[in-house]
Amino acid sequence: MNSRKKIETVIAEEGKFVSTTSGVSMKPLFADRRDTIIVLPPCGRLKKYDVPLYRRGEEYVLHRIVKVLPDSYVICGDNCENLEYGITDSDIIGVLSAFYRKDKYYTVKHPLYRLYSVLIVKTFRVRMLYRSCRRKLAKTVRKFIKKKKAR
Image 1 (cartoon, rainbow, N blue to C red):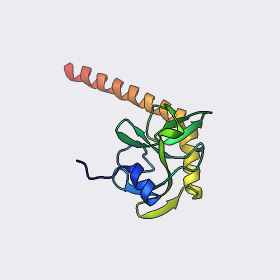
Image 2: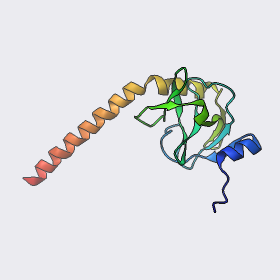
Image 3: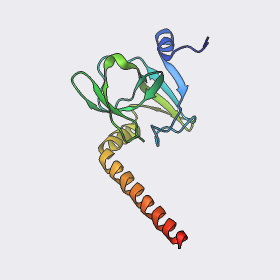
Image 4: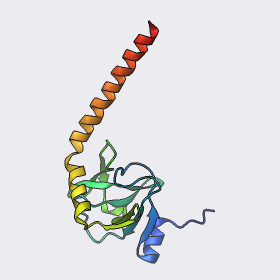
């Protein structure tokens, strides 16, 4: 049997959850296994730019709210291309309240963090267009190199 407590249990018992981040979906804000997050239980309805912790199947996900709908949220990781629809308040376990990035402490109310949050959401379409063009260019270059080597 797994001796690790579920995050929901930790938040219920201790009032918060503290852990290092894992994965790259929230880059450049969080690096894999470098940064430490502090998650508190949600207090009411969340707002655009909040970063909820929720479950997707058996895995925990920490992504940013990009749009608030009447009965759900549209959520996306800062380094992700696909929007997630249908995340409801009942899916949300906690919400990011603060973090340590390279041993420096920030709250979600810090002006630089708030500016970053707005910029990362507002530039979503431009960033996705840039990635798409970069992929297409790389594919074209690979084809060109392959043809040149075949000669």
